[in-house]
Length: 88
Image (tube, one colour):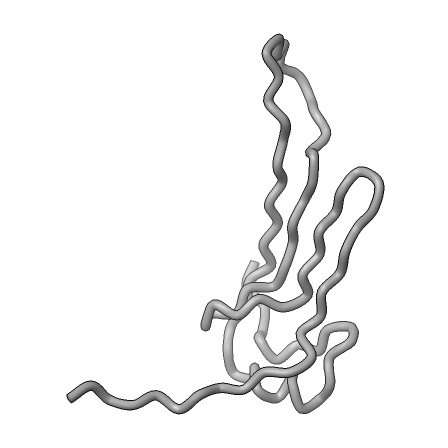
């Protein structure tokens, strides 16, 4: 599902959100599972999960790493877009 890139996420400043306005973003969620030798199939719980909001520019926001015993959250606090130069 596509979202507007200018959506304000928890922990982000209005200035940061403005830099993404007019761009598209997609929520991404990836789960990693352990492989066992005697795998009998059936439902399994992931070893860990990663989720984030991927901007069309490739920048990730709202990173979450979820493990069995704990989780980590990463918020984008600052970004500087560099000017591109044309190739000769």
